[in-house]
Length: 159
Image (tube, rainbow, N blue to C red; front, side, top):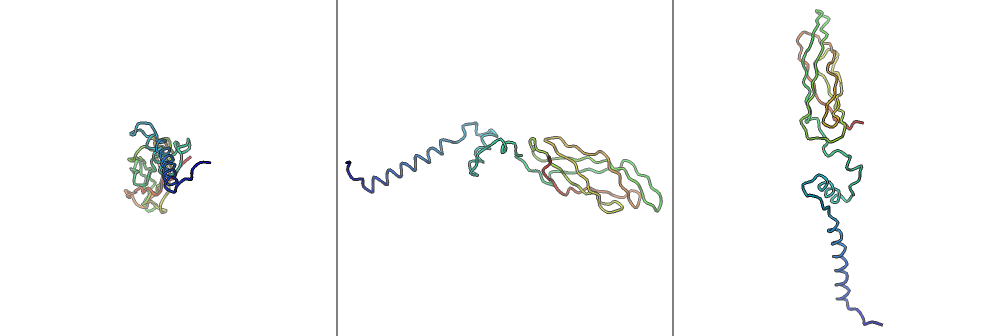
């Protein structure tokens, strides 16, 4: 039988085991270029306690907000009928000023204000770096030359 082990030797052995485990974790850091997106994703996942999977890699890095969008509204055509009001054809042009959302698709909902029967709601889409929308909208106003404005109300993950 071997000699008895002292408490000091047990403490040193435990400390070495803990350092070995920590060293193993530290050695497992990503080896990519620290400026690459992959490296940054892996470090963020490790800090959050998870792994970088295909699903996480496909998730958008940027989540746009309503402040990242604007929607220009211009009157293309207006036909007025006296006290019956006016039929107005609007040209709509959305703009996105935020960071790239990668391959993600986002539905942006807006409200047109200043029309006859209350607000009208519509949607356009941000698909990666491409915006798609209906070029025109038909509305009615109570008076000629009425100011119509668009308000972005929400941004939701699309499909």
